[in-house]
Image (spheres, rainbow, N blue to C red):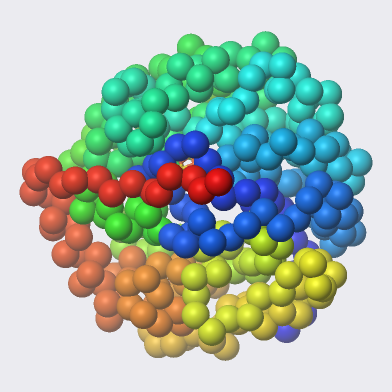
Length: 360
Ligand code: SF4
Ligand code: SF4
């Protein structure tokens, strides 16, 4: 089938990060992936992406501000007329650096918070950076840049969702994304410790409804965990449909975790044009269309809506990347998810397992 037009580029500039979040979505073997693309190489990628129809680039990681050449990279995105959006943990990122990034063409910032409570935040991040995050948020607003807060929700912070929204209001954020934890990568290692109970989730949903009615600002996006929905989400709006991800090594992927899927060949912008890697690489085409689907997805009327769910979750939970996502109640492997939900109903203390410290 012919490849669709991509709209969004996720540029993973580095996997280095000073934090060690227990739900980090970077690959488990992130330490083996080096920063292979220098600033001119990223700028060339941005020009090629614009030629494909991309209009937005998320500069992410790891922590993108760990790159000393971030200003040059932002300027390259601006020259290619992409909306340059920085996805950051807020450190190492001084106000002076933010000013330089804004001058280079940065258009908006998404800042992650782990919690509204300092100690709880440190416990989830594995490091103490709460104050730096507050400083970063204030600096972003002083510079007049649009600010989104992103908070991953789980059983340790769901009860503080009202206070988290209040923090976003106090920081004058334009938007807050409350994303219930997706159990991939490091989060899957901590699934037992992170998955909330149904009652905790329902109470938080009710609070978010109240707060949304109370004020239009900030805009609140609340993403339910698919382990409680009985139907999976359409991963990335369909793999290889709208978004392309380039990892720090230059590999072109349909989602940030796809390199963990076995037997797939993805191409690298160091050796191929971005158009070739997007349109023709075997890995990018593996899950386009529906020929790859197995029963029950293959004949399911809902397959056009959710494309069978997340391939990485299917592989992590069944060992088969083409299987129906076990988050779906029609999956023959749905029992895995039901057992996890039952476990979440029992109050228990489980030790958290942290992402490794950043190498180098
Ligand atoms: S989730 Fe945490 S550890 Fe992972 S890149 Fe983001 S801030 Fe760093
Ligand atoms: S069977 Fe497959 S296509 Fe049907 S709802 Fe479940 S995941 Fe979606």
